[in-house]
Image (cartoon, rainbow, N blue to C red; front, side, top):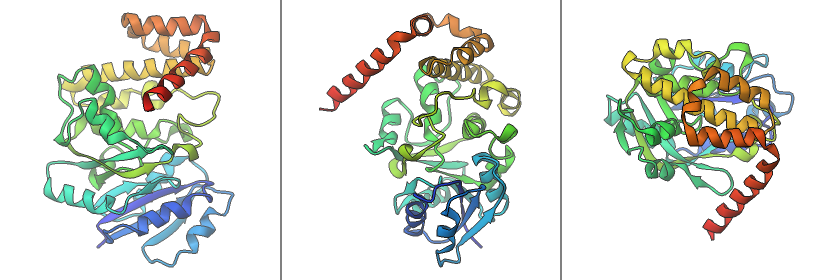
Length: 320
């Protein structure tokens, strides 16, 4: 019986899939299966996968339906009691699976294990960042009295390349969001439900590497606009699956996220999206300083490139 199912959605990532697969096969823990879901690729990524001679690797195919649908299909076709996901351009450190399996074996009250991860070519250590922002190491559940800092950063414990779940947790919420072939924020929709409903174990050590420079869908991509995420457009199921005593925290989280999305759309000159969000989340106006900054951006979009350059220079100076 396979202990861990590794689900990898594959769409036009021929340039990176070998690096990803090699990192899985280099794991010190070996009782796993790898289910790779070709989501309608038109490059030679599937052929590269087929060249591997390892019985643990299985390639299945579907018509292009987006990353959430590919992960869900892979989950349905897998059998491990534990499930984890790895995008086709990211990679693991050799001890990722062993550490995660050991954590969940020791902590039966925790429903998933989240490790730290590196971000981008500079290998920014996200695990240490979260500790700095008061997200505890070890068994933890979002407290009902979580302050703004904890609420803002708690979802950062999740990443598609750094989290191992008990299968029933994924199945409880029906997996990732798939309506309208969603390909942006489909993971956040699931993570929100898990965050508000479950205790977990956070391991600070970076055991995965998120290569944002290879991403076509993430915030680091060159896209000129971003759709409004389903968590902001289709929130009724989120409230239905969220314990009632957590509803005020969910209200606050969605408002925080809407504000961030507004800033992003304003910086991309997508004022229509920003106005739609402001209409949907009028409570943002009550955050005087943040709302003022947003209004300045909306009224004076020409200053945005100068502010961005200033911030980049300040980050560069602090790294020296």
